[in-house]
Length: 374
Image (cartoon, rainbow, N blue to C red; front, side, top):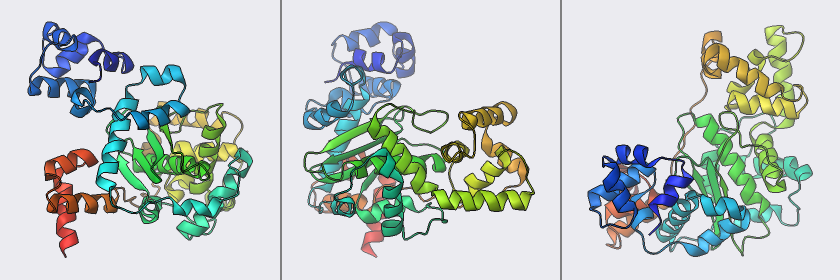
């Protein structure tokens, strides 16, 4: 059983706040945290207050082999204080239970065999991915990336820990991406691209497995800059994947001509660019900075100004009359839903347990069952 006090510390919650959110007195909460026997209702309340699944508090079989993979990519100090690793490790273990019997899903990484994942090569990796799997030229948006991930067999799920931005892992030669659920789908699109970048970076190490947790994000969705080469590669890969260099340069030129804009690049042109490629303003501005269309730190300055003046960039875009974005379809991998349905049909799992393992509503499995029967 994971320590309640560990979760409190990792999530920076006070006992008073957690007890209130759990619907318990402070004294009762402390008693349970100290080892007193608790009812199932009390444990559910505590799990909700800590924002962790109930299984994290009561599961006696920790996913230790998977936790070792996180230990290899996270600093030891960060690993020890982050109970997110416990939650995520168990979710990956549960995903593999559903995926048992499905074929391995990393053969697509053969495309990059023999290419070293350096920062300088990130753009080339992205171009290969776009052409081979997205079937795109360098001027088209990649808003169907979630579907491509499904087609490649990558297991895509929503993370049980909403504080996490994204997770990528290769376990038992199976590629997995967990997404922190967000209301703004363009932000999640970039997260998928970033996590695919991590998978690509490990294309020649898939036998040993790996796991990477991107817990925090910079201003509203961009992973924080890091000195770690792997994070820099994933960030550069993602930026190039959703905003290819030539496409951005062509689009910016056309937008400025249409708007008859002169002088330095401004927020209006970047908002149009963001909507054209279906990414957030922040991602589009940062890409313009990478391509030296904006001065250093110019992306953050423009973003902060929009936040100060309009609350968020999307409100500014609406005021300008910029057309709404194309809808991004984001869902749990159909292959996993179908595998869960088959296990329910065979009696191996109850539908409630299957939904819990995949972190989806039971209704999602009912729909998958109906569709598979057609």
